Image 1: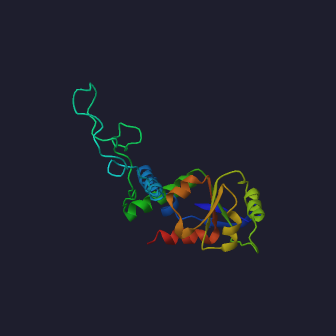
Image 2: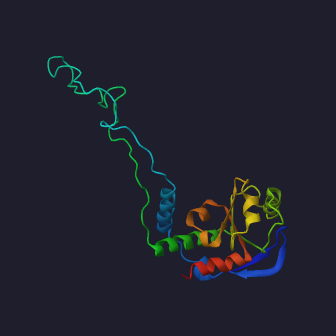
Image 3: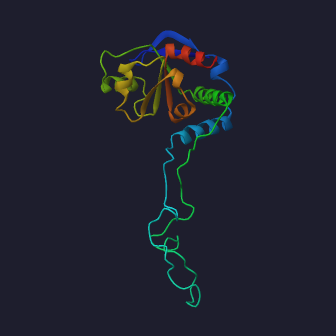
Length: 209
């Protein structure tokens, strides 16, 4: 599949880029996308939530009332979850939410996400560029020139280009990442992918391993 290359002013150039069909036009696997996205979100969780169990609550262990004859239920400790200020029954405890996925499945998920972006015509290829100094205004003008100003965008760089990264940080709907760090969640979360010409080669290289 061939895509026209744009410059940062939003103008079409005479150049085109050929996308590798084995990477950008695979048959999407929705379940692989689901599992990879679930793992990504699970890995973002700190898992530091905790609640006080019965052994952790401070308080007297004296029996509150006699066992029988009161007409009420038995009560052996004020730490009981039934009483105000008592423990919490089966409350959350610190845990690790991460889980393992096979490399082949994660690779299939990323390929599937890219395939959906191709089908929806939401991939834009632009010439390689850089800014002289980091300026949010310059990055915003590039998005506006490409008619992507109000959309969630993910710009994929071949490497860490510091001035571009810094220029994008204050824009809520814009994100910049390297080709080697591309993941399923970021691809799907963005409405449009912006690829630099050299990023296309880097993406294809990353799937060769």
